[in-house]
Amino acid sequence: MTRAVSVIIRTRNEMCWIADCLAAIKLQSLDDVEIVVVDNGSTDGTRELARRAGCKIVEIPDSQFTYGRALNYGIAQSSGEFVGLISGHCIPVNDLWLNRLRACLEVPGVAGAYGRQEPLPDSHDFDKRDLWTTFPIERRFQRKDFFFHNANAMIKRSVWDQFPFDEELDGVEDRAWAKKVLAAGYSIAYEPQARVYHYHGIHQGRDENRAERVVRVIELIQRQK
Image 1 (cartoon, rainbow, N blue to C red):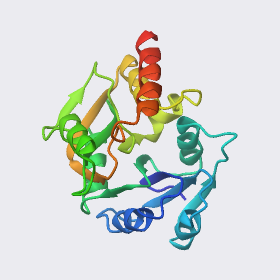
Image 2 (cartoon, one colour):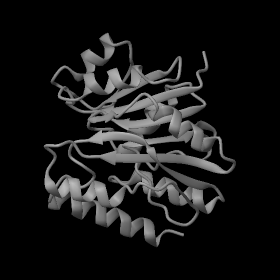
Image 3 (cartoon, helix red, strand yellow):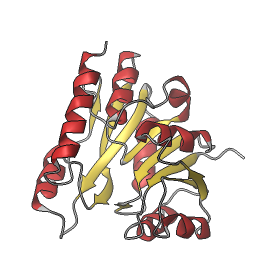
């Protein structure tokens, strides 16, 4: 059965957050939302909790895992015309999260939309700074800027059929995807009212290993035509 909206959640040991994440998704103002959890070897009960909550479970082992492949696996197992993407440790702020993202995709030529990420009160100051400066309060449509963040986003399935996520990249697959769709003539929307809480932010404080990995991949994307 085809649904209007599917939500793909990537997880790995998310027991601190997954119950709240799923509860917030089930409270969305849209009806009949399919939830697909793509789990990468959780050992803390994440997968079992999601199964009890009625989610479809897709398992991806470390030997096959990349961020892009996990998303592609989940989307391939979903049926929605619109595909929401959220990390298992992000929590929608209110019941309009999915509606706001889907409304952006009703605009002709928009391939994907991403929303605002906000820190929690006890998030690290570095993460608060990064989230507040990266995700502003004004809506915008991007035709050249390929920044896109799939911890809180939605894409059109018809566009993903043409442009799946790169399964070889070691992260930042969302920006590589955005660059391809922009080059194909689509645009990307940023919707600040599609809000989620993201405890550890987009850079995870001063994680130097993560920073090095992200920089190498962005350099690769920038060199690509």
